[in-house]
Image (tube, rainbow, N blue to C red):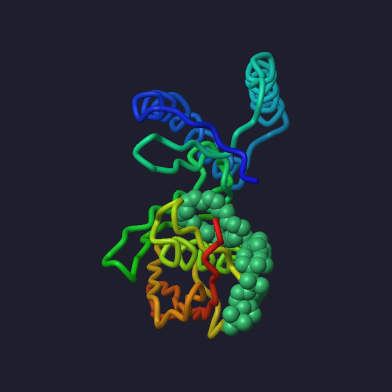
Length: 204
Ligand SMILES: CCCCC/C=C\C/C=C\C/C=C\C/C=C\CCCC(=O)SCCNC(=O)CCNC(=O)[C@H](O)C(C)(C)COP(=O)(O)OP(=O)(O)OC[C@H]1O[C@@H](n2cnc3c(N)ncnc32)[C@H](O)[C@@H]1OP(=O)(O)O
């Protein structure tokens, strides 16, 4: 059902070293484009260079697209995932730090590319970040115990400021394959969004 490639840790490390800097450069390009105030000549020149870069990359297409890699040690590496894909510039660099067997945290800086209400994070992105951390905690970060989002409920307490965010999640209880889990996002002034999720461990 899942589209993934099996590869060694060395291969993963080499691909990661090749593509991660490209992803970061595209993120910086997006941020620069959102902050620019220049004349037509500058914008036209930048556009031509970006189009040339896109053409160069398109001239070397992958024969198949595999959104995730799996190593023989059971490590899963997301290439394309919108939450944490190493090769996806739209994915905020979400690094989930497991703080125990049932809890985790993320510290992330979300800039202009994630804006919804002016100066604040898009509500859909808040949902994405919470879904990601709840899913990773419920799955215990392992392909062997992947849990899918069954139901997730969010309470937006107040707008979340763009900038440094702290996110936490913790399993409250489990019933067979059902995992009940809560989480929250906090900006510099405290908690802004809370989440309650029911994640279901996949049968295989
Ligand atoms: C989609 C899979 C994710 C793929 C990820 C792949 C690789 C990841 C690699 C490494 C893992 C590391 C981290 C993972 C990080 C993030 C996870 C991302 C989370 C997502 O972003 S994932 C996308 C959105 N998500 C979906 O795309 C789900 C689509 N859906 C289904 O795939 C099925 O629908 C499923 C599996 C949910 C259930 O199917 P099923 O057949 O196993 O369930 P079944 O009928 O046996 O029910 C058993 C008991 O759960 C209750 N129950 C069932 N469904 C419920 C629901 N929706 N809400 C509340 N309760 C529900 C029943 O009422 C019963 O309860 P009871 O036992 O008490 O009667």
